Image (tube, rainbow over all chains, first blue to last red; front, side):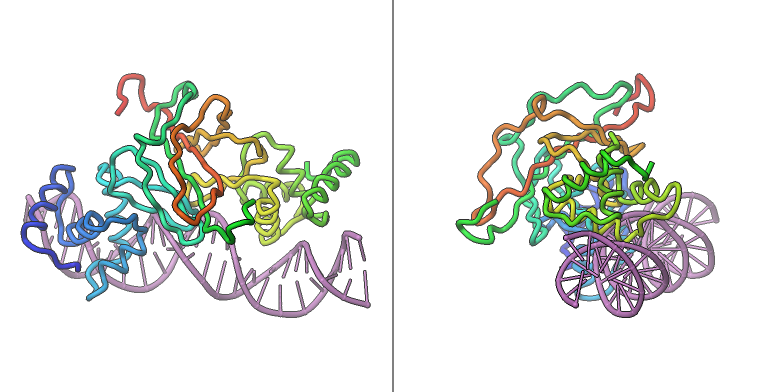
Length: 146
Length: 146
DNA sequence: GTAGTTGCAAAGTGTTTGCAGGCAG
DNA sequence: CTGCCTGCAAACACTTTGCAACTAC
């Protein structure tokens, strides 16, 4: 899983370079793991995943690399749970469902869902990004919705 | 600041009872501190604030009480920073500006700002809440916005 | 009186740091 | 060869927990 073929590797190297990131072994493994997975992952999930077969990347490197990828705009950080930051390879503007029970994140295409009436930003500030999180919960019962 | 007059106290007692919360001394102090402040506060800010003049409430009690107030719908939790959950006494639907530099939270009246095109929730789930966070950053310079 | 609440300190998470050794360019 | 990167373990910050003492009703 952490080993990937030459074509993938070449492509990932290219991708990292395009974003101004020196492609080291660990970064390739991390970037590849991140990009090849559909779902959103947290740092620890990625750590576990990447070291599944054999230790390959340390905890510090996971965090360093994720922060680097965010800084270089290769992935997006989504904060939905104070205990866990999720990383999202979908750089298209989009929003999320967050299942508070399972911690699952599901993309919402922002073509569907949009914000109207964004007010002027406070003076002297610039926009960093807008995030919509729709928190959902597994219905405990068909009838009792509160 | 942590001492408050009889009228405020009576009102806070009433408020807690209305929400099904037994009004203990600590809860009164915490609820009052929370409600009397304009800005959003984090647990630690509240802890510091409440114990400003003399120790009155322990750390565990702050967290217990905040979680209780959230559960009983007296305050709203806003997650914008993985390191800090903010608590918001404004229960009207509204959204937030979040200054990533200063960690300041500013309310946005949701009469202004609304979401259109909310998709159907995934099957078997119910809505917990929707949160829009507009991240802003102090402009480093008038010209160089990236 | 009794159930529920509090305080304390210790444990638990997720994340960051400091520094010696290692690797990319 | 040189500077950036990595691993490790320890440090960190916020939050929760376990249990004895206390308090609201």
